[in-house]
Length: 275
Length: 273
Image (cartoon, rainbow over all chains, first blue to last red; front, side):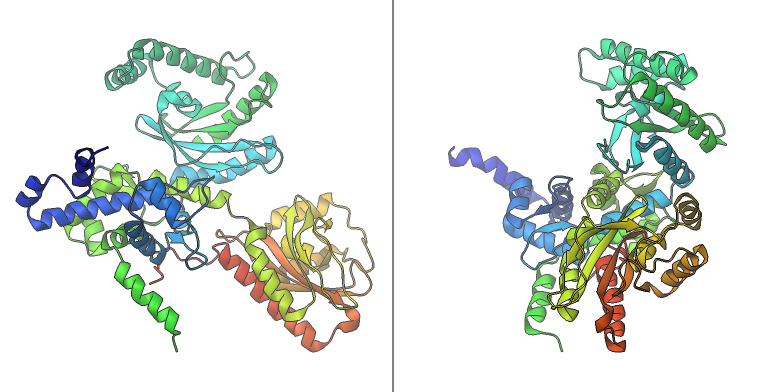
């Protein structure tokens, strides 16, 4: 690649073309720089996950595409702020306990979570499976917290992930409380907002899954067709679905009898949360 | 007096500090369980960041899931990214790995057998152990297990359970003598549980073997839950007041150090610099 191919990248990094740089006042550039550095800092935080627990400066720079010197400055500040830990000076970095403090603030501020914690613990002990609490956020559903099965082979879904309501069993449990008109409006929005040419047929397939979820929740003893992920909606006192409880079970262990057992327990737990 | 290398490190930290990142941290620290939602004006006035700058920062943080829109319009909460990162952090905390350097430190101080015990159901299991190199020593091995009411280590773990869970344990478990002088009286077990909660440590004499003395202290996680215990155990023949006191001091301090490394007592409101 010649130098002409590299130029646009260099220009993007420095906040636009030379012509625009000349025109922009210094303060605007400084602000743009501030936002860019924030995005880079967030990018660094997002390098860490269940697999990448400890990362060196080199690895972080490589993953984020940030220059090593810049990454070092950002990391130094993240360590000072205790968002990231560096147990050994010059050694690899890992997530600090700051995230746990933030998670505490989110969860402690949620009435749904405070009510659900003892119910989830009881369910986990009764079923010896992983119980997940999901919270509705408009047309999305967020896995808020989980209580993981204590022993053996577990399925431990990641919390803090938002998905559209129709795209997860917990969300479909919420959608099962919608009237036909509400569902029509939801999928109309979906068709408008999605680029997929198969939006209409996908919407039909999702509606079938929602009908199946509705039928299973209405009668846990019936043979549940389709996906075997037990999930039930949690309603507030006005009857609106505010979240869902679901059981995460590895596919190899799931069977119709266990599905029905989980569903029955979930329904009774969800009723307690509404009361 | 501050060491030269520490001073150099502080100077370089200040030189490399990035203000935008400090502001990110400052804004996130404003949220709490009691105040989970804030308006832009509150964010600006509480953090001391000018309103227009705060608006730009909040927009960036919102777009990247660090903050998200609250239930009320024009209010923000901490975003789902923190739940995800906390989940990763929590799932990768390995008590044994965190405790090993501390166990080594305790061991180096006394050269007495030191182990980390964790609860597995109704039993205490040794997860890590360093055995004394003295000619007469108390031996223990990784994987050794006893019921929770047995020995200072078991009862230190028992003390971390709720009263209802302890009651349930005492009714379902047969309290029999597992060695020489195991405590089998529920009243004594309750008394030890209260003692462990109050003092932070427990001692026991000759429970599994006739000739041993042990001191155990509970290890707590970020959330305050008892997740392990640290025990120093030695032959009664070596027991003196000095050794007893030293084992108590080291077990308590060792458990405190492990707990700190697990995030116990971590105050997310305070930056280190």
